[in-house]
Figure 1 (cartoon, rainbow, N blue to C red):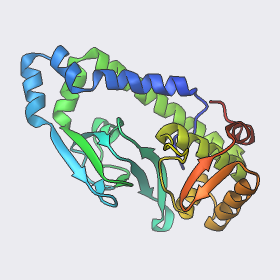
Figure 2 (figure 1 turned 30 degrees about the horizontal axis):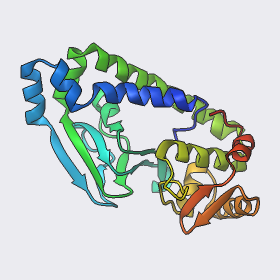
Figure 3 (figure 1 turned 180 degrees about the vertical axis):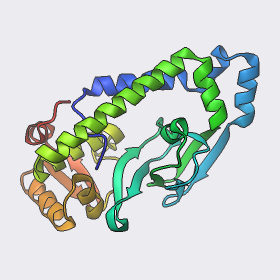
Length: 244
């Protein structure tokens, strides 16, 4: 299920993301790394671009390094029972991915599919590990990220075990908007099929379609094709028992 199911405040999430972005960028590296290390960084980093529908990495591939997303959105998923994909979370601009498998020395346990055209910076694993050893601020920011994601995973268990499907849909919509933002017209910045929404909340596609229709009738949301706009955040938060 979606691992972004949390009760942590928006401010806390933004702080953790800001702390990492502050110490994981070219300007910071130039100012804080040794001349030798910065020159090494310049020589080993690679720009990667993929189109919508392509994979940045696939399940069971060997982790060769980490990716800093500089443009676009990706869907992180893995094969479940009977080969059905399970969506884990969404990756947006500014996110760093690929580090978990690299740090524990295992193949990727999920695949990252582009939901739009995506640009990323790739940093080889050996140099990324060297950066963690060389810079204590970067290491601490990564520890904060690990702790935050552990909390997300813990709250997912509660989300699945104790909430109704209706409550789960309310929470997922709020968290998607929190994570990915909204366009100028207020629509969440991702286009999901009804099957993908059903996947996120752990129900059948038919149930997801019915609940979306009910949310529209209750004037909680508005839809335009696959796009969804939240009309009443307060009622959705109350319905989903969400603290944001």
